[in-house]
Length: 538
Image (cartoon, rainbow, N blue to C red; front, side, top):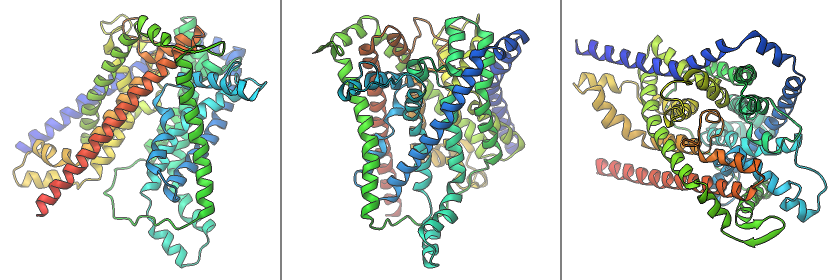
């Protein structure tokens, strides 16, 4: 009887979570699709601008994806397969661009390579950053850190045993790479390609800032909705933006499986290679120098009177930021980010537990439902929320922004938790039931202590992304609920790059602080875990 009641409770929980995910991810999208009129589809498809925007998006995304994934793989190989020093520093430093909004990256490109840019004036360049190659350069900066994190994590846990066996058999380095490394990296590389392409095609921040006359689909959608208030026509464009993410979603759904328990693998012993390490230092040094230049220009622009006419140091830009209620927007964004992170932890753990620790068709269905946000870009989700919730009591409040961010970023934290829970012994609950220990006690005393660092990673992911997002919330804010990241576009439109730089520095500072706090907490958790193990063994 007790077992039957527990199973009924689990089924009820699955239904509740499934209804929530369906109501706030799938249903708004379906509602948006049904709002589209045939005349809107005809208007967009017959538009010359639409054809040009499609071609521009395709060209920029293909080139950006090729460069970003190649750069990310090179950096990951440098970190994991070379003997360079300061690896922890470089690992963090090369991912800094992902801690600021894409609008900030667009601003930095203007600051560096614009008509009066720092490098433009320093090297007396005649070219312009505005246009196709400007978008590609900014998009690479924006997207490669995500691919780097994915590939670096995969290479970190690769087993060295097959390489040692291949070396004993006399295979050269090229054949080892072809026979072992390439098959091992195949799926992660495909995942990185999908991620980078989807990020690039749906981002409007960089092409809006430095695209010039080169219009992409994301910018066209933004202009239709924000500039002309043509929501239905924007929805049509949103459907086309959905295609790459939907293909990635189908691929993930087909290739994903129940996570298995880890097996002990042998770590790589990196051999001495002077030429390899020199080349590694050059590549990672150039990337780090460019990122450092980007950050320095934010500081320089933010604290001068007016570049390049008046380079007098000043705090006027900070004072202006405060005067126009910048601190209020910062407090609002902090509140949103903390709420999203806290709710996200609970929802991610609950959902992942129901899918990874229980085996049934309903679990598989919930798992598929949990990954649907991977197939809906933030820009499209935000527009779908406009159609779904306009006129309701949550529209125009912080609630809808928290919901939009929560659903937008849900899939990745869910998969983190899903993988962590799936690697534990699948018989824990069965053993507990045999010993008369409730499922809740097993969760509290056995499962949660083992995944504390995963909770911290999930909190950090939700918080950082909510601080800097511009896509899902672009259509949902008002003057009372405006996130601080959207101030960058406002200042850029006024050609006030000094204040835009201040906002970028504030967001970067908050996100770096959060990352540092999470790092300290993870160290503390690891130390306390080791102490407990020693006490038990003693």
